[in-house]
Structures are given as C-alpha cells and as structure tokens.
Length: 558
Image: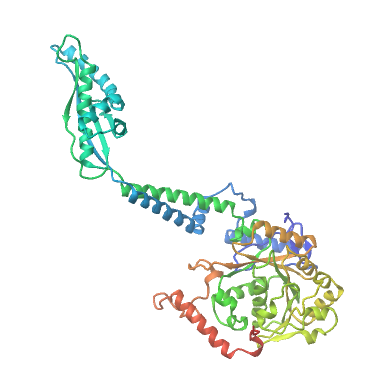
C-alpha cells in the first residue's frame, strides 16, 4: 500500500509530510482545495519541528528483523501472562515429578589398586604406572556379568544378576589408583550391601585375573580401603535442583513463546503499528471501559472521567482537521464489525455538542444501525425516509436531550442500502446538513464487508477509521485504507479503540483525569483510591445522573 503522497481534502501534495506526534498535541493540520504550496511547506516545517521535539521516528522503514532490546522488554510486558503460565506449568510438572519419584539412596565403597612390593625405586615407579593403567580397565569390569553373578551369590536371596548390573557405577578418582563403586537402590540397607558385595567381588575378580602361575599372589591387587556405609539421605530426587531447573526452563520457553507470538501477531496494539501501515495521524486513543460504554453518553460524557477525557482529547485533535473549512463532514467507519465505530461516533458527536458546536450525527449504517439504540431515540423516521422523499430533513432530525446534539437516525432498513447512499438524494442531503451544522458526523458501515463507507467518504471531507486494539490486524487496516483510496477519499485519521488502561502517569491521553471527581490533590495529601472504590463511585455517579437525565437521553426500553 502506497502512502508516499498524503491526501489533504481529496487532493494530494507531492512534497508535504504528515505530522505524527502524541495524541494530546496537534496531530495534523489539514489543507483544503485552495491551499497553496507555501502553506503546504509550512505544514511540512511544523511536522519536522514536531518530529524533532517529540522524537518521532519513521517506523515504516523498520523491519521485524531489526529488533532492539527495548522491543524484547515491551514484548515481555505485553506477553507476561504467557511467560508466567509457562513458568507455573514448568514448576507444576517438576513438582509432580519430584513428588511422585521414588527416593534413591547411594552407598560407595573404595578400592586401592596396587602392585606387589619392589626392592628398588625404579621398580616401584614402574609398578605405579602399571597400576594407573590397570585401574581404568578394572572400572570396566563392573559392567560384566561375571562380577554381577559374584555379587548376587554374595547377597543371596535369589538376587537376579541382571538387576544388579544397572545399579552399580565405577569411577576412577583422577590422578590416583583409587576406584569408587557406587550402588543405588530405594532401600538404603540394600544399597550398602550391593556396594560392599561388588567391592568384594571385584577384589576377588582382580586377584583371579592377575594371578601368576607359580606365585601365591598376583603382581597387582585391589584392596578395599573404605567399606560401604548405610546412607542417611537420598541422592534423588533433589527438589531444589529440579524446581530451579524447571523455573529456568519455564522462563526460557515462556520468553520464546512470547517473542514468537509477538512476531506472528499482526494485530494493531500501538501507534507504531498504525504508523507502519499509514501516514494518517492517530487522533485519539479510547481506553476500554465497559461501564462507561454501556452508560448514557449524555450523562457519562458530562462528568470528568477517564472515558470522557479521552473523547475530549479526540475532540481537540478533530479541530485540526480541515482547519480552513467552516463546516466539516466526517465519516466514522472501521475495517470490520465489532470494533466500536458507532460508539465512537455517538460519543464524539455528543462531546462536540457539549463544547457548544452545532453538530449533527447521521446514522448511515443502513444494514445494522446502532445510533438510535445507543442514544435511546426513535428509529421509525430517519435517513432512509428522507432519501426516498417521504419525510423532510427538518422533520426527521431529533434533539438529543439538553446536549444540543441533533441526530438523524437510520430509519427502516432498506433492501438496497448501497443504491440509496450513492444516490443524488444522498448528496443533496449532505449538502443540506453542511449548510445547517458546523460538524456532521456520519456513522457508516465497515469498510471491508461492503462499499457503503467508501462511497460516503468520497462525498464527505474524509473518513476517520476506528481500529480495535488487539483485534484489527495491520493487513485489515491496510485494505480498509485501500478502499478509501480507490474512491479518492481522504483518510483523516485513526482512532485506537478499547486500549487497555495504563496505571502509570506516562500516558497523557490514557489515564489523565483520574484525580478529578475521585479526590484530586497532591499524592502526599490525598490517598489514591482503589480500583474498586473508583468503580463504585463511577456507578453511583451514573445512577444519580440517570435519575435527573433529560427525556431525550433516556434509553429505549427493550
């Protein structure tokens, strides 16, 4: 998707740059059809200054292969649940395995390999070298069946030699002629007996192997210097070691899965993701608040809450769209259904009306209309009846309580929505609305399933695309903007919807306003209320406002 030439009011400027800064500041200055090249260069200069001031980078040039350490940290913060789940799962598995494992006891006996006494020092040195070479061979004898049978005979009780072979290991102490035999068994007494039987059997086997004809004793012998003892503590399992290794393995797997999911996840979660797709500015970020979204807009937006504050930020940024135009007609749409476009359109219109502007909200989603239900208005008369000439526009417009907002609902659902929206009657209705109101907000269907929104955006000043955090993918946003470009409609900006709230004060547009209405003051003087207290006070404020709200703001009874 190409965005080399940003659009301004349906036209392109080959040298202008798009301004992307923080949502609370000036986002983008629009240029209308009568703008000159000098004005466009001024916009470019302001964009350059803002980029330098706020440290904005061009994320389009950034590829996934160029991953910084900060990106890994952000991935860990976003995917911490995956990492914790892997850690807990690894610890749980290690705990179960350790708990169910049979304790094993180990007992060790030591043998000293030596040669017969020599009269000269040279013979003693040669004998020492010979013993060092032989001790390695004796260690291999531990795995032979002959030695296992000797030990089984010594143990008695019908012991199977095959069972003994895997229970005993031999280790040569480095740079010595000492051989250690270690037997492992669930029974500590039997572990001691097996180790002692093997030590005695190996001593006899060495004597038989190294026997010299005509001599009473062989040239080399293996003597037991340390008898096997009964172990007091098991050598396995080791809970601390097992849990430590499980924790390290769980963290590694968790981080690997988090990074893999992050690389494979193409959903839009940040302004960087939007900037990687389009040069259109981010006009606002609406945090997720289920209670506020279900409340009456006239009531919840009149209070000072985080939800209302995000729409005030959006209202402020909307002022910099088409700054030279006396009236603005803005289409609000999204890539797919369920991204909150109708909620954003309705609350934005109410917020603009509460600021004293003459605003009309028009429901042009003639397939799944939501405005009438959202605002509690009558849906019998609306856009469709005006377009077919059954009702005059003045008679179809309804007032929404005391907010000053005028609303044109959708009316009955027609069988041919696309034909109505691209008719001459629709164009005349939009012109009539522009002559009466300062701002016209058009709630349109999604861009990808149908073409209605693109047709409406072509007749308006442009479209604001609502993107749902964590659901809308970059490809879907890209294709939605391509639909607008296909009809030469201007993408005025993007609104991130249902973003998770941030507790820190670093995100101005996300959490600003928590203090007002909940006891705002210096941190040393006022204790910050808990989230449960904030929710309780918010419900109380909404309930109090519901008892005194105007008739136009009441919801439709189901």
